[in-house]
Amino acid sequence: MNILLVGSGGREHALAWKIAQSPLLKRLVAAPGNPGIAALCETRPVKATDVAGLVALAQEIAADLVVVGPESALELGLADRLEDLAIPCFGPTERAAKLETSKAFSKAFAERRGLPSAAFGVFEDTAPAKAFLGRFQPPYVIKADGLAAGKGVVIAETRQEAEGAIDDMLGGKFGQAGARVVIEEFMAGEEASLFALSDGATALLFGAAQDHKRAYDGDKGPNTGGMGTYSPPPVLTPELTEQARRTLIDPAVSGMAAEGRPYRGVLYAGLMLTESGPKLVEFNARFGDPECQALMLRLKSDIVPYLMGAATGRLGELDAPLWREEAAICVVLAAKGYPEAPETGTVIKGADQDFGEDVVVFQAGTERDGDGALIAAGGRVLNVCARGRTLKEARERAYAAVDAIDWPGGFFRRDIGWRALG
Image: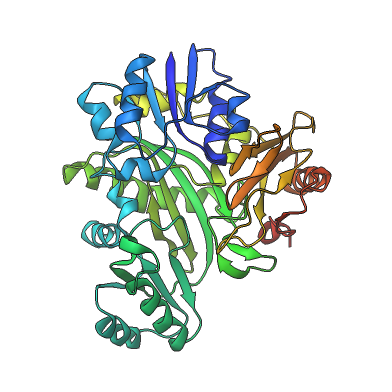
């Protein structure tokens, strides 16, 4: 098979790493890719937001499958254009991707379909938005409606902080993504990420993880796109997983089909594990980043048949995927100043050394400079991932690798996995 992989982050590096192991693969091309991906396959300098360029590239390489990593390409309708050309695409259409690209749509959909979630309101003006805060007790949850690179959510501890977040979002902090805000009731409990593949009619569970969103140890600092993750999360028991499948995943897939928006791709359900059971925090229309990295280390099955099955409506013909018994962890190394103003251009040494078969360093925001040195070119720059018989063993391996990388321009959390390990 010829496969085109769209994206340039750590998630896409992990997908490329796993796809490259498939005996079904003939040719893998990534666009635009990054230096780590370039060590695995061909890369082409076509941005994930260049829909016309990506469609032309898929035609040029006679792609049997296009795998879309980032949500930005989905929002712009890449899957729709490929569908018009009968090129299978792992990723939902623009209409189906609204489950992620519009939090207002997603919340209204959950309400229509009876999916357990938090009470909410949607606003375009500051005065009614601030008045709505009176319905809840702090903390308050304020979200930008559109895509904001994982940073458009504020958990405000005070009314003043919540009103400031509303002013920021409706005042243009996130551009058009913040033209509307969603205000939600705060849900208490532990968060977990549950993944399922869907071909528009059938849903197949595809792993779980637990993320760390805050920038600093102890869950302090601003929200980020994710500073680390581990899989499987002990808190998401088989019983809770089954409950989430029954009350959230299956009704979402059937509901989208019933509304003329059949969902094909990976459906990522962010869950809050409350006293009354799993409730929906939000849906995402792609693999989580960095959750995907940990999942790929644990996935024993060949991933390509599952990607193709979801893209072509044949997921029901496949058995459930097989997973390694080991735990996996991912530690994110970010550039100093992230998430507000990451410092780019700093040199990274030692990221490509051999750490052994159970440790993999996935590159995210990286480039090569004119001398060939690896440099930081984004906010989240490296993803150091490891497997182990236990989560403790996996974490020890990951942090040993982190400490062996020479990058004074970066920072990371030392407590990834603390919920499970204490």
